[in-house]
Length: 463
Ligand code: ARG
Picture 1 (tube, rainbow, N blue to C red):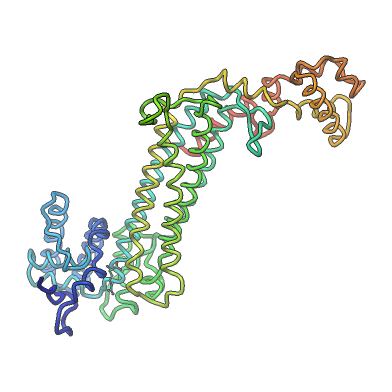
Picture 2: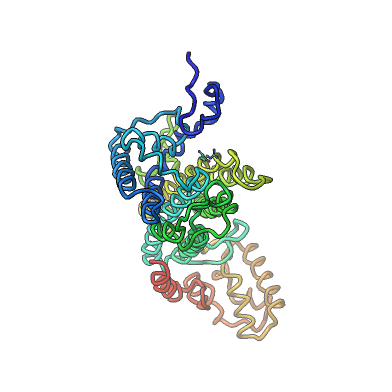
């Protein structure tokens, strides 16, 4: 097998081409070809600026622009000749441009380096990914809001320690996720705002001797401003780290919801059922309907965490400015964006697909003495007991009910009066799950009226 040829872009001082193994470890084309649109956009902005500043001739500027547009077309129609010996997407495009535009192509790289080029492309890509993920997250919020609206008064058990704690409504539970997703969107938005500075024109690391206009290229590419320090501009990957951190947290939220879907759809709970669209069967146990989509969403958070740790580790201890280590920055970001987008879509699909068994939810909500807090609150409100004291009495009543094998609402008044003589029959009014839920009308509480207000407010905040 013949050795790879000398590199056309940087091989000037080299006598020989790289070894095959060098070529193999060096090439990043299969990953970074996803930057093609951003690379071409940034090159168009750069070339136009070079021509405006008379750093290159208008004719060369036009030849470059025409060639870049043709290349974009070739890539999008599958006609572009990708060549691994050109390392990455930047050099592939440049090599093809030379074939199309001749010597003019060689002028495109004036006052720029692949270091500021890749940093620019990557920021543009992350910006687009943030916008895509924001739209998908919003879709999921919309699906949850619709579901929450229908179930604003559907009673289910609320859990702490995975034990029935107090009754809540299913709508209220779903709205908790709308809040989490709102924070996820906020994190991505913050990331986007800080990412939105242009490295272009930082060149290799020190800036350039050509009279470029960094404000113009920044503006052209939709950046808020040029990055202020050329060394920071080529070596900073905070925007990618922030993206990965935001993705990991968002994935974690989805994994919590996925776990709840797994639990709720298990026969022992029976709160919800997923259709054939989001479940699989077992090849051996014919009765099974497994919530695989939810399980995979639950698991993929591991992958998202891994992606974050990859880049944190690549960046740690890296001296300024560019080192080839930085080429390892893209794979985790692309993977995280793809993974999160898929998880968001799968979760939205499940939210729309869920069939809710209201009777099963209500029955579970009534079990486990879930209105014991309501009983304690009644003792405070009506008999003016200190809460700690009331808690103690209510606990004694739970014990009594347990011994008699009934729930709190089924405990005879005489039994209650053995524990607290001043209890009256009025107490039964607070012991039903409906009353319990309706009474939690504090701001952000689970009372159906409050949940409906929260839904209306969330539609304004998020949709
Ligand atoms: N493929 C490279 C990367 O992703 C492009 C930058 C190369 N710069 C360099 N000085 N070799 O980082």
